[in-house]
Image (cartoon, rainbow over all chains, first blue to last red; front, side):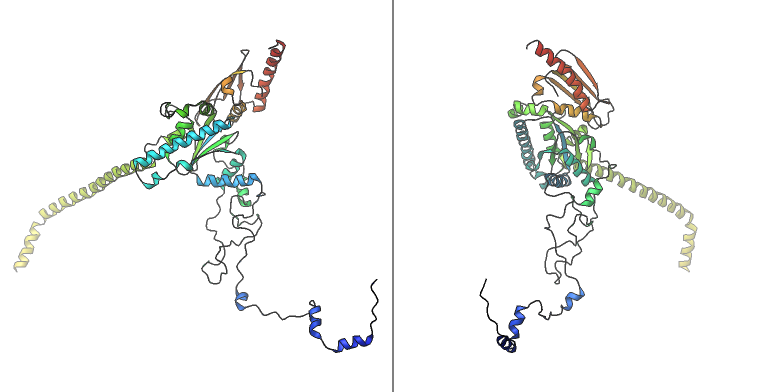
Length: 352
Length: 97
């Protein structure tokens, strides 16, 4: 127990009467009254720009975003949006060495096509190296099916601009465009493919995109960054050879005929293709791959056809004009024949 | 599924028909070295064809099995194959091979 201090009333009186108020105010902050300056007029007229409650790269997700399946869903949706041409294969228990060998053969075949196209010249578009962007990847079928439904059936309104002041507006304290959304996935203004709105749009079981029967069992997809019939033909020759797309000869590509590659290819089955949102079966995929000269060739054919049509149209239009001209001319001749006396009368007038 | 006693698998299907799932799942159940131990013949039809799905199997004892995939699901197919294969396995065991 601490020693008891004798407190005399005289001492207390002295301290109170000293009027040391400043120190007392410090001691009792809760009692203190501070004058708050009035808010600036600018702040009372317009509201403060919203503060983003989540990172721009991680908008709130309907399913827990930390799960692998959520991220795969996101990845597949992005893949489906970015690839116009996709081949679907079923793979029946391929071994890893076989996968490796097949991927190697695919890359060599595609690089060869790239080199051929570069050697042949042509537009910059056809010269872009596609080989390294063509990927063969194994899909998680169920998640892929769900992502495909989101991509096919969820089209959020494109005109949804973030309701924020323009970045160049001097009133804006930050140049970042911050969407005025709530940090909950239920906010309908979230339009990414993991949002609740996307989930609801894809949950309708009656919607059909045509690929449903293929989306079961082990699947592999070969994705192309552009629609290039030449590269597609190379992939078909490598992965699904048939008489129309013969496999490379043993002398030309000896590594293609190694047992690992052949054993792997026997277990790959081409099921179908998705080209610019449309579903094709094997025949359709081969038809796309068989377009001669690629897209350039197709454009050339179209131009030739249109030119032929243009010439036809010109002669047709000209013909109508010509016949009209002939009719009018003959009519004028007739009239000229009838109107001779009138002319004479006119001459008589001039003479007078 | 016991695939040890299969010698021949031949199937024809149109991958776009909803029933073809069974045939494709059956092919996916075959082991990685299936092509070296049995003859696997897969024929895929174009999207528009209406031909019925066919799956015919041959076993080591010569039994042929034609499965009607319009009715059977993959579990039923597995059951059928396993029933016959178990009999073959028992015979093999009794004969001491």
